[in-house]
Image (cartoon, rainbow, N blue to C red; front, side, top):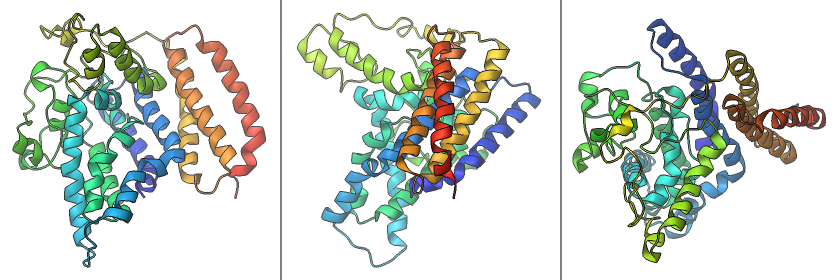
Amino acid sequence: MRSSYIALAVPFFFVLIGLEVLVARARRRPVYRVGDAIGDLGCGMFQQVLLVFLAGASIALYTWVYEHARLITWSSPLTPWLVAIIGVDFLYYWWHRLSHEVNVLWAAHVVHHQSEDYNLAVALRQAILTSFTVQPFYAPLALLGVPPLIFGSALAISTLYQFWIHTELIGKLGWFEGWLNTPSHHRVHHAINPEYLDRNYGAILIVWDRLFGTFIREEATPVYGIVKPFQSFNPIWAQLGPVVALAAASARAPRLQDKLWVWFASPAWTPEGVSPYPGVADGSYVRRAKYDPGASPAMQAYVVAQFGLAVAVTALVMFRQATAPRPALATAAVLVVLTLGTSAGLLEGKAWARPVEALRLALVVGAVAAFAGGWVG
């Protein structure tokens, strides 16, 4: 159900992103950069094409608990909706907060924070692994008798609400700020200014942050990204790199207890005998330049054209996942992911990118010839 809502919303997402680009240009605001936006959208596309094949697994725990262990079966049709809407928001707050405080959860969630820009495309920068790390947090709703269909709908409402708060172009909203999450509140959450770190975790409601002491107002101009910069536009590495980095940190730790503890410690914790990341102690990391490998306008135009085709194929995969032949879906998904990798590689001037791009184009031609008929009718 949630994936159906998201699939239907995709065209509106891109219309609103286009509108944001036009408004930003009219206001002479440098809100978008090609490489960063492609990295953002690519992460969401990578997530969605994989969830076509893993959607059942992503909600398996919830469904099992509801079917075998629920404590309540509601007679009123409205009560589970109310429980779901409030419950999803409350439990999201705690999952989100712990995803900033526990390394193994942060390794999944950090994907959403890697962008050094802040715009509607960042809302679509989603992590694959968070579909699974969040499952245990929502299990209490299954115990409380919220049916999977209603839970999925409430989760979709939460996800869709959070799209519009990823923008620099909307200022503060008066009384609205007291109860609900807004662009101003969420800019704070994405900022790496020392005073803003680990604040404003809410999804729809900001009241949880006010109640549990994690709320702060936007005052200083936010600086976006992560404390330890990602420095890549590659959405494939964006998903895999944080887990690899955490495993490497565990391997480097000199003591056995630290090798184990690093998975559950705060992202700010450094094992004994390992130097902290430069610039963290004095906050000077906020003054670093944004990552920009300097691709030519011609290369950017080529990548945008190829990436646009990948967006169309991703949408087709999402809409036809129940009816298209599985081999055609799998082939399309693989080609989308390959396009994401080569797009970033070309923008970053990687030596491997051009030969891999030539191979990708050949595979696209072969795939169209082999499977085009499977998408018709």
